[in-house]
Image: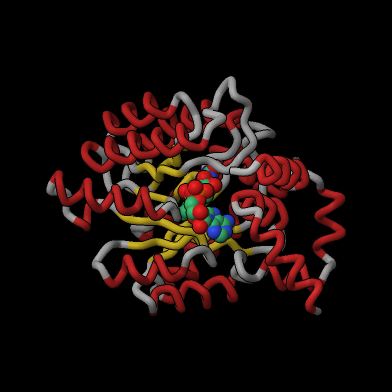
Length: 311
Ligand code: FDA
């Protein structure tokens, strides 16, 4: 990447944490319209419509109610109730969708007991419907805490209904993949979207990509129905090659992509007979999510400002 791209990426990741900037952007009609490319609306109803459209294209979904770290118990409990409702509405409409949750939105920063209780109610609902809850992975400050909670409390109680995310930019991920395979738990592998220091994460993209391929191959060979979350065509080609070479059937893994990113590639994979799931974020708290997507592809900033200039 060009150094200017890296500077822009860092600036965008910095802005993703600035609530004051969010308040300004949220009221901006044009920013909202741009967000609608990556975010499936602000209400459950709009999100379910987006899922129905994806299901019509042969694509499954994982619904994410946008929102990150909450600061009081009432907010965490409210988020938990909204996820329970979301699972009920998915079931009532017969949609092919599971949910993705962030533990910080369930009170992880406030109190572990509160977090376990809140996510527990969501997991019980998912279990009742035979559905599945993916615990998104946040910044490296949460990696160990999240895995401890998962292996210690959640996975033993709901082995069929909960899974984790591992990020290939972290040095620790080779070891985390080994453990996940030993414990037979479901993993989504992604590159990682947060700003991390070189003490914990590979600074060079080439190393992140190599680490991704190592983790992906180990999960495909020895893991349990991994989610291969990437839009990287070279890595997707490698996954297909590896599956063929190792005799891994297409129903033993799925490709995952983000809502609004590389729709052409999503459809092509479905036509070729692969399982594809799209991550569908919705809700009013879309700002940090949008900024991370811009940081991944600074060309999107030009796309956004270009649209504003045209107005
Ligand atoms: P990379 O960034 O190398 O991009 C490869 C190509 O994909 C680019 O050249 C471009 O063409 C296209 N592309 C990528 N991002 C784009 C964008 N925003 N807009 C347009 N084109 C784009 N992260 C995390 O830390 N925790 C998590 O829990 C998750 N969960 C998750 C779920 C799913 C389903 C996906 C697909 C991704 C995540 N991520 C995540 C985000 C992930 O870590 C990563 O930041 C992005 O997927 C971008 O990385 P790629 O693998 O696509 O490769």
